[in-house]
Length: 484
Image (cartoon, rainbow, N blue to C red):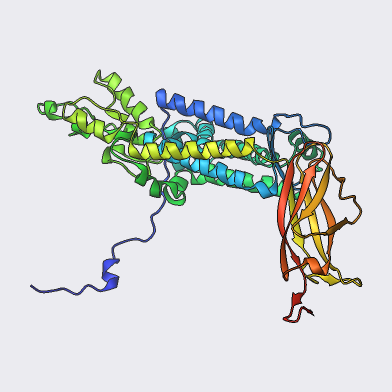
């Protein structure tokens, strides 16, 4: 056998490394999945645009916006919950909760997130509806794009993009409202008093919404989003997916002529492809570009209804049930499986952990930082003094007083600059920072480094917090003298 040597340039001579974008014109369709999509869109956009306007009374002098991330004050407010910077693990747990919930939903229902609740899907649907209202349905839009420029085409295009920009501007403004008081921001924008930071972020999110939902569309799902590339690992034969019943639909063709009885139920009308927002032909099998929105099911069912044929040629079901129907066996739905049990258990554990930590969350905290230079000072009477920065976090809305104490060294004395250690006052919802000086006799220090515990107890509530620290001193030599 002769072996032919193939040069590297020959292997790519006929292959293009760049796929030219082909614009997709999704066709309007109506059905149960379209209703679900419109319902999800309305609910999600309603929450997004209206949530910053919800009020929550937290007392005088505190923000009354229910959902607010106050960057200058370094606080995040979620109704009755107030998150401090050092409690960022709550936000991390919230992200983990969302991820595990998404894993569970994907294992059970396939790409339900992508098809119905992903922000890219929601805003693209909204932008597409604006486009249909202005330019018409699929054929009208295709014709308009092919027509030469005219006053009518210019007017329609300008109207469409004006609608897109308006939605994008409202979207960017709503996002910034989660970081600023909503009524105040609107008033400042109306009077041209908004800061350049606020205007800049509104412009940033306005631009991204306009570009991603208006221009990029399905390219975000196909090329930019990483989720389709690993979600297949969460699928199995029992996952609910948008599937084509090829055993029933093939071979495709119109029911005409003497061989029409040999054809399947698919009449090859291509409506399932025309309505797909990503241009997928579901009849070719599962594909990464399919977002599982189910519009092809609505399209196919509308044709089957007109032809008086059984519905669900394209259906939302598991691959195992599709194979069972092909073999004339009854379908079986197995929602409780090993992977779904693992995901559900993870969801329960993370939720329980968050609820437990929130319910037992302390309303005060003590942190202590020792001076780095000098580590200690030898006083005239031979005693050793260490300096610390003491911080007491008061997470209550009202001011409280705390009693500070230290343990670990016999006879240690304490001094707090500008405050009485028995009644250290800290304003509500703030951190009190104090200069703490500890003094100990040289004889009471057995080692160069002595472990101590600095504690603060709320005089009002009795809640206490402790912080371990190190008291530094001179080193002894073998003769019992200090080695400075």
